[in-house]
Amino acid sequence: MTQDVTALQLVLSGDPALFAIVRLSLYVSLSAVALAALIGIPLGAWIALTKFPGRQGVIVLLNALMGLPPVVVGLAVYLMLSRSGPLGAFGLLFTPGAMIVAQTVLVTPIIAALARQTIEDLWIEYRDELSAMNLGPLGRVAALIWDARFSLVTALLAGFGRAAAEVGAIIIVGGNIEGFTRTMTTAIALETSKGDLPLAVGLGLVLIAIVIAVNALAWTARRAGERLAG
Amino acid sequence: MRAPSSELPIEFDHVTLTAGGVTILDQITLTLAPGAPTVLIGPNGSGKSTLLRVAMGLLSPSRGRITWGGLEDVPPLKRAIVFQRPAMLRRSAAANIRFALRAAGIPRAEHARRTGELLELVGLAHVADRAARRLSGGEQQRLALARALARDPAVLFLDEPTASLDPVATKGVEDIIRAVSERNIKVVMATHDLGEARRLAGDVVMLHRGRIVERGVAVSFFDAPQTGEARAFLAGELLI
Ligand SMILES: Nc1ncnc2c1ncn2[C@@H]1O[C@H](COP(=O)(O)OP(=O)(O)OP(=O)(O)O)[C@@H](O)[C@H]1O
Ligand SMILES: [Mg+2]
Image 1 (cartoon, rainbow over the protein chains, first blue to last red):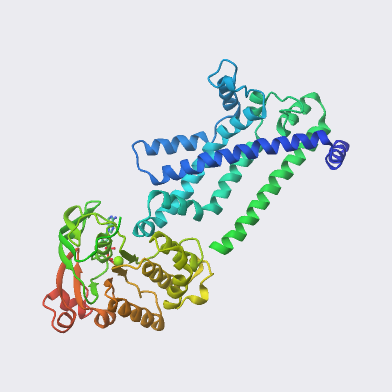
Image 2: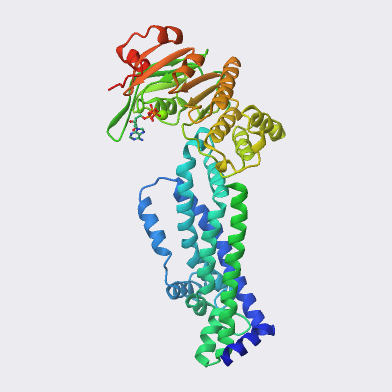
């Protein structure tokens, strides 16, 4: 109980080191979700609307990739970004950039798979009408993404939840360097192993609060939007 | 990318359509020419909706061919359809019409005025800002009609457009169909309402099990049907 009190005091005191950790965590995860959305939503839409050989296999694979183990992604990205790796020249390893790359890899399949499902369901409903309006492929995709926007927010939330919670990938490619690549999850792992439980608990509380706040915000926006658009 | 000067006549030449081993349309040969509305009648499952989809260009024949103004594969720039169960976009009623105007390439400057006129025409001006999917079934059907008219079509296909309308709304839609037809827009309509068929039809095509069993000028079709199937159908008997 005393530990929890100190943890709470730490959070409420607005400790600048803690604040920096929270800010970096949000920066990395939100950037990863944004990048994953830019890749995953068009990819999902394309799979939803296109017939090609092996499509079923691609869908199964995409769904399977939703459960990629973060440490394996971390390892793969580490190998790509390390000095001798194919992308070593960018010097990204052990920077926030590397962490964004790793989380983007982790989150893209989640957003793509959920977007594919959402957009395909809507396409089945809209196909006749959009075909009768002689809409081209781009017009179709635009209309579907727009009309699916509230459901797509759920896909983004799932991606954000995954990114914000994971530690395995970013600890490998980021290195958990204090003041540079230390995030909430990597700090919790470290502080717990060091025995500094108040800081770990404090960060844990902040992390949970942020996830709840983001979800509540998105849920409210979704409800309001659906009331207007049906 | 302009539409041909004429979409008409639409000619079915021995059109057969099979799906999943079932013959849905069987050797349909039919010409849809300018003039008063052509009304499709026939029992459930006789192929009316499928025929409209083929005429719209949404389904290709398995055998035989279909031409619009003598050409094959004419994109539906000047054709519009109201489906039996129209899908509403997840937007307001007005936005559904604006979407159709944009898809039809109508200049943006005209959108507000045309949207207002079309909503007024189908009696939905008071629900313009309501989510289209929250409208009643009959309101959705009328919105679908406005959305089809937004395309400024030369041919308008209607699949049971008054099936879920109350008597007042039915009269309203029939008046619109008459007005549309007088503006030289070809109307091709499927209906189960024989009274409506009598009121609107210039000619009648009767389908049964995917085949045309009788076709003729409306007056003579209703007064002196030539086939046993048509007589039985008009008498309200079950066709087998
Ligand atoms: N994709 C499909 N695959 C298999 N059968 C189909 C398909 N589409 C339609 N059918 C069948 O074709 C027949 C004709 O259907 P259609 O919808 O054209 O009938 P309809 O005359 O419009 O009937 P209703 O009066 O009930 O609207 C039906 O028996 C239907 O089950
Ligand atoms: Mg039908």
